[in-house]
Length: 317
Image (cartoon, rainbow, N blue to C red; front, side, top):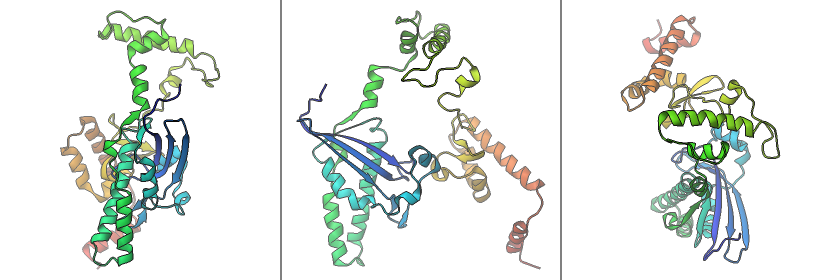
């Protein structure tokens, strides 16, 4: 059925350099604007992710590049967000918004980019060294991108999906086991038995390939345990993940940096982990890796770099 609209509804989606809203940036932004008369307009921007303070391109994290297929060199000739921000703002103005999981990520990321652009414009205006033409350009851009995204109504299609089709055990039991609720839901024994029945029902339902499921389920625990991707977390909280066989930090200021590299450069970070509000398992895994690094360093042969470092520290004889 067609949407009943009083004003335009703007569907949007973002691809970015990563998932850290404060540190990452938009690399692709697509709009589909639907009007009350059902007219539809589409616009997509490829964007060079930019650090306005350091005046360098923000690199795409390996994980993001693996998902969206975009590499840093693909964006070198694309405009920065600030250059297309006035056009983007004009599309957003007087529209409601819609997306899939956009309320939690896409909308905050878009707002962050506008804030960065506005902050850069204000810094140009306030800098006495900025020549008059550039100052006027900054003032013009600032006025054009003045938009309050907090005031827009946001339709998150994923929220509707989860609301209408809850992904809980009772819903799974109804779907896979004959359409009825099971008795004594939310008691441990009943829930456990229901989970067993659901897995058998899934194996029955997806035993053969069809147009929606090209790969049937295999009745094999090794195969089933890998569906959805095996956890790459070294610790259960996934503060450390494995990437190409290397333990990598998965949060905070050292996100995507190898644990060994951080340990060699900033031992204080490991003390911060030990004293912080992290799970005991996370702390244990950081300690284990630290012991492994120390043991490897103690047992490996002395290198030229080691000798050079000692000479620099204590002075050459």
